[in-house]
Length: 453
Image 1 (tube, rainbow, N blue to C red):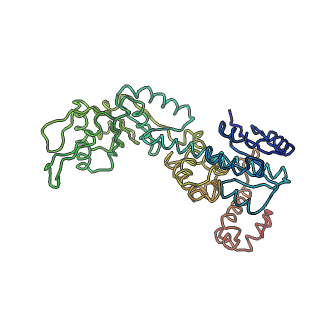
Image 2: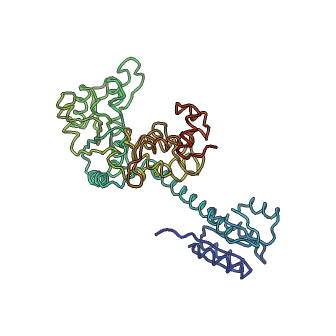
Image 3: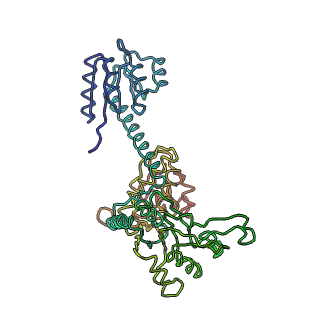
């Protein structure tokens, strides 16, 4: 159920109190009111409100005391002062003490509506940001996979089921689809969730360096080995080791890994004494691993050891319904991290994103939204905040309007308007970008009825 904003009205003048109460109820707010400022202090102690509308000058307890109590008990509550004693001094004092705004009697109801609406929006954003900060804090070391796609929901159900079983898992999918995220999700739904999760990209190292990373070495095992180094397999004992891009692992390393899985022991470089290990292996690849097996570049026996359960993550282009959902998730995430009041995405941007194939998948979408938040000057991510190739896509994409495909002239008109918008109405620059002279541009503006300032 949607939260109805909670409003407390405090005014010792009954007529003013009833008028404000009527207006706020009509706006759809949950309203509580009192003529007694002393009673208002008791109410504030017992209940939290989004907005407190209070008279400034009252007997016994004045509006400044109510403001002070709200700031102490409910920092997120916005207090709006209403008074018939409108002076610059009292207004400045109230604002310095933390009042949201200051309205003088006799007030206009439209003005009150506007100020309260703006204050409620500020409260809503503060609550969302607080919730998101808490979520981000909770997800440090935890995992949340955002989706409403039925296929992805099925994969999450499978991941929850296999989490506690301790079997090895092979995850397939294009780069950027979230293979490591799924590996972490499985780990945190397993009996090993309190133990270590380590990840290594098998394609990022040479054979010698990968062997050193995975198996470690004894002191003096080779020139430069001045001290003992534990490998990732040993360090992950009791937990999970994620082997990304497993098909890039050299054949000799595949033999050593197979032995670790079979014997549950690891041998450091330069050592003759194997160490027992208890590791769950989750491997991933963006290639067709069965083709690699057929081609002889990947061992079939290792494939069978890793592929106890397989999960194939679909690309973002095959789950379009997730694009708006993920976009807003990343928007909120980066708005909090960058401390910016950006909370909306324009419909034009959503349309462009829905028409884009996302070769970089979810990782690319996250980068786009991070860029959008960074560049946004106001509260909305607009087309101008998108990367250049996506802005061009908005012009190239043929969209149906009013049940028909737009004509070439429609497309030309839209493109000219977009270029003028991007150049801030500078027709000389727009003509250069369009590769026509100013006279030709002027004729087109006249032809399409585009205002030419």
